[in-house]
Amino acid sequence: MTCSKIFSGDLPELTYDILKFLHNDFSTLYSCVLVNRFWCRLAIPLLWEDPFSISIRNYKFIDIYLHNLNDDLKTKLNKYKIFISNILPCWNKLFNYPSFLKYLNLHEFIISLHNWFKDNIKAFNPELKFFLRDLSLNSTLEFKILVSASLIKIFIENEVNLHTLILEIDTSIAIHNKYYEQVFKVILQDTNFIKNILNLNLHTLSDNKNMLIQDHISQIINSHQNLKKIYLSYNTLPLYQSLLLSNDYNCSNTLNTIIFFHVDFNFLTNNIFDQLNVLESLHIIDCSNDNNIIQIINSSNKPIKLKSLFISRIPNIELLALLLQKSGDYLENCGFHSFDNSSLLLLIDLFMKYCKNIKFLDCHIYGKQIIYPIFNLIENNKQYLNYVSIYTLQEGTNLDIERSSIILQNLGQILPSKLEYLNLALRIKNSNFSVFLENSKNTFINKLLIMQKGEDDILHCIKKLIMKEKRVNYLAIWNNIFSSGLSHFAHEVKEFKLHNIKVQSYFDLYLDIRKHDTIKKLII
Image (tube, rainbow, N blue to C red; front, side):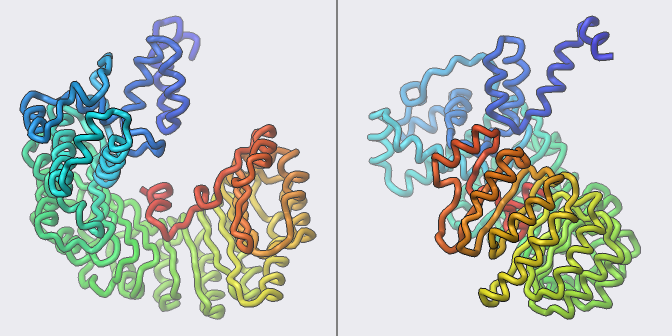
């Protein structure tokens, strides 16, 4: 089949389909650009689909965008004594780069502009450096806001067809409000730009009391009528509860994902789920007053696909039993952190009974009596389990060693044959660690993270039983006592690299489901 396509002239289509799998691998895509003109034409659009989310600290792409300024915008920038042709390098415009934009996250957009501005302050261009140094604080803010609005206008003028616009709003940084206000104003001036967006996602990261921004968000949602995802955090629920229940906003046939993150469910008084016809996933992460939301879900006339449940306080067990009986088959991500061992045992028993498809399991272990029930839960979900984090909460050195020993001596033989991620935060003794590595020799772990809370040097075991047998792709080790990590030692990093194992910082690889960045990676 593939050969027939090649000989019938479908090679460009096949090559592009292959390159699409690399859309997040920017270094590989950049290498593809350098192969030849054909590969360049295929790879460049993929590289420019979502440049504001690229983690590498290079913001020259904004310079390239600014070369698309129209005369009116150039005149406005001249007010600040800036002449783009003198400040920015003369780029050879082989492509219409703005037209390739497919994904735009407003929070990442603003952060990129801040970093671009800082980079230009450090630039060697004396003309620009002199100008930036002499700008007053107000003029500097005005300039950056003008650039942000100008970029949005460039995208609109180049008839960008956005696949996804993410209204990620973090008003905890007061100065960001000015950016949001101006950017929203520009977006609302072109209704076609809004209507052409395929997916509109709403993320609120802090208590948003700016009425102008709230009004702009409402106008965008009202103009678009295609809200796909809502990510609500902290005290933002009252505003969006009224939005969901209002007849002015028809989300009932478009909204498919709701994420509640650190939300106080005391604010929730109505059933917001019954009018949502295409809701595919619900995520509840470290919220308070969980009993309220659980009661609403249980009383809903429609099936609620609860995909994530992370709790720090055990809700009413009877209510939770009804919830998991109703939604347990959908649950994929779960975690618990509680000192109430008796309630925790009941909770794990409910997970065992109703949840068979867990992919991400996050366990904080306080009492050793819950260790074996957790082992049973791991075995019960072995077919789907892909991410596992296990922590022992410090209660005293001897007790912590005892809990860690039980885990290390028994965990290895119950792990699935392949894991994407395993994080162990334990007080590790060499003898127990050797047992774990030997028992888990048939498990390949893509990313292995170890937080060593003890003084034993476990590196020898890792070199012998992991490095030489190539059982991981990425490795991160952090010693909690000495506050140091394996990534700090260049010689060791080089040695592991020779065995095709990438040593990285523990905190770079660590997936804390209770952090916004992890939610973005796993859920959004």
